Length: 194
Image (cartoon, rainbow, N blue to C red; front, side):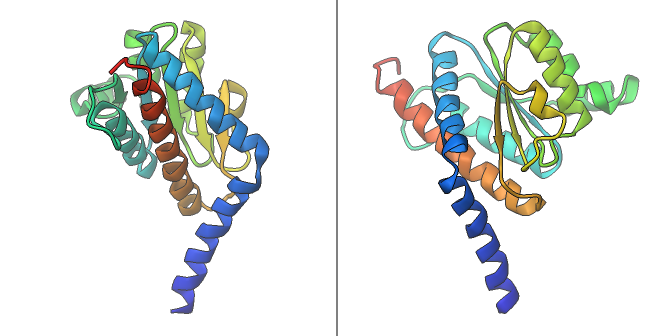
């Protein structure tokens, strides 16, 4: 029982640190504006991650392309790992490190947004995707742990959760992701666009 309480308390502490970090809250607010504007201007939002972060990427993409709170039209958002034929072919024929960069090179357009989730910030396939995205003029948003890793220098906006504990980081990624989804949905559809 004490171990369960300790884990819950650690999760709460991480979220309290986010709540107390005015700089991080400001970045989250800016990301809401950036994603809203991208959708308003007809651009797409792509998500990528590995393992649990891939599941989170898919989850957040579905909140936009499906719905969050509001019964409304779909927004153009997609998780890049969902085509298993593409993923396995490119990983086999080239390398796992280029699975996302190759796809961004093929479908990413200037003005689109790429959101990468990596607890370390050092996932090679996401780093390479961010490099390609920046070359093509996409906006890059990194969801990482406290240090930001290699993604820090490649992120136009960095949401670096103040933790080095993977489960606590991933829990906070979903919390922040849900905040962004809710506020983007409210902002976008309050303008009569939907």
